[in-house]
Length: 115
Length: 111
Image (tube, rainbow over the protein chains, first blue to last red):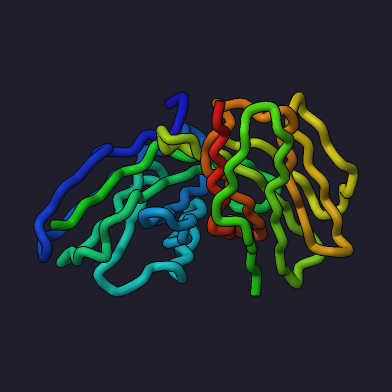
């Protein structure tokens, strides 16, 4: 597609429920990143995928968070047993490949509210 | 460790004033890139500039200019003759394999 697409744009869930957030990267982009932005805060790296390589999960805050990328394209970020501190905007980005010389394109984000 | 520091949390100016947003970074890599992104109230991150570690030339794009100084590990961003539409949160970022963001500076430009 023309840009990075994320769905849903907004999600309200009850504490303790599981949620799935979806990211559809730009066609042909092999690298995909997830970031989290809490209210008034900067962007916190969560995880990235590059092609068929093992993902870098070093930013995932707890084992309740997981992500997968099927077929090297669409990615799903799953948060199990959601907590109120999980409330944030979850941003996805893609780039042609991993590396500092490739620009990132960000999606509009999913605003998650845990009540 | 890699780190980006934006010490200014919030800046308010009146239209037509010049404003400089500071960015200081830490990295042990000799090759890296620095970025500035703008996040308007709509929430989407807008790419402004990318600069590699070997190019210390200052850059100007319209009312925007960037001053990269390796000696002080700084990559500052200046908006000349600010406008209300410049109101946004601005993020500085550093990358090797992934982008590391600063905490952002919220710029408010009043008419």
